[in-house]
Image (cartoon, rainbow, N blue to C red; front, side):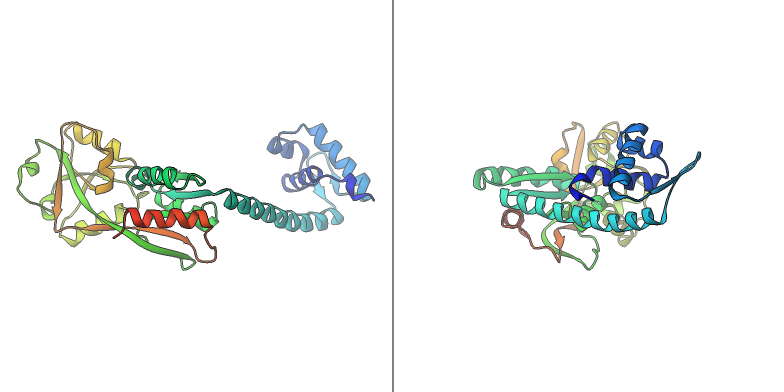
Length: 298
């Protein structure tokens, strides 16, 4: 056997057929015709000198030799993929490529200034922002898909490290002619029996808002739960309900006819930088991490 005659493509085709128990189904998954799949497997069997599959009219089954090869290949190709990803990550680190996952309000409220500072002071750094809801941003950090994340004070797994870098208050946004807008001082208790239009639970802020309402003796009457503050603002503009919004989200407030009031007593949310404990940051990622801290230091 000449191993140079066996390609990585052939091995991946073999694993696809083994997983899907058929040439047609496997071909659909990797965009190859059934005849091309069959020809590739035939060449592989010929080169190895063993029969990898038993073919029936209904399905294709692994032989004992095929099953042993499949198990070994999955392990080896998994290690190869990990090695290649590591090499790619190192290359990106050398080039100054930094991936950061952030929630939408943070992306809109903080990251524009951060990007501008990087362009001015670190032209060699290429910052890529991944605008995701809280849980997805956390998962990207856990999976190593990004260098670090910027999130809202959750309870995090033990294998993540966090640093609080900023606190900001929640505010009340409401139609400017609403009766509460005329109050000199608006308290959380004033929200009792009010129709609330709130961020949904994909937002890291929603549990904090719920807790604040309960803490101040308010039974929430929620009529809408939405994923984007711009949609909330449009609903309020039509005269429906009031909303509790983190201050950073007010950067998206372009609707006329709305008023903003501070809620008393002040309830803050904490913004945190988060990274994996077992993964050191590159020089470029460390520079971005530090820059965010300096721009928004508590």
